[in-house]
Figure 1 (cartoon, rainbow, N blue to C red):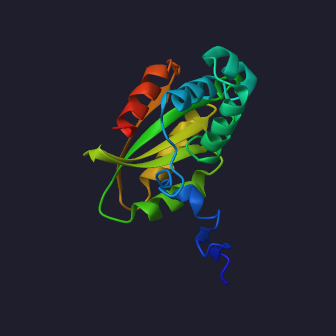
Figure 2 (cartoon, one colour):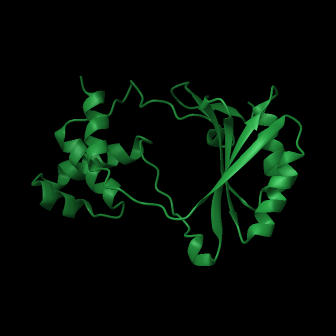
Length: 192
């Protein structure tokens, strides 16, 4: 059996983790659906706001038995609906962050992404392929120390085949918002 795919006891295909980072996540499984009722939405609101919140705290705040919160929270966290990760504050390290807005001509965008990551992997925070804006179909978020460094990155990217133009904008400040309304809106759409 190949390393890329294996089958579990139920004869379902299991993909390797190597390809998971480049794929769009699948919707929540129909075999084991996550129901977005009032209780689950309340749990989601609390863990979105504070991923380290204890189930007992949620139970006290929403007046629902602890066992119900624990069971439902476990199902929510195992659903792959959320990912828990750490963010690094680049500004506190003396770094600056910018988005490079790249217009590519005909060509394989994936190949261009590979070339960019090969040349500047030490500066890249993320790369996204976009549609909708005629002059931007690739965005590269980078961390850099000074103007000389970003100039050098842009200069080398301009030499890549099929890169027509590059614009850039520096992120001065990220403004966080309370996403509680967004959560309610998302999950109301999920429950007809």
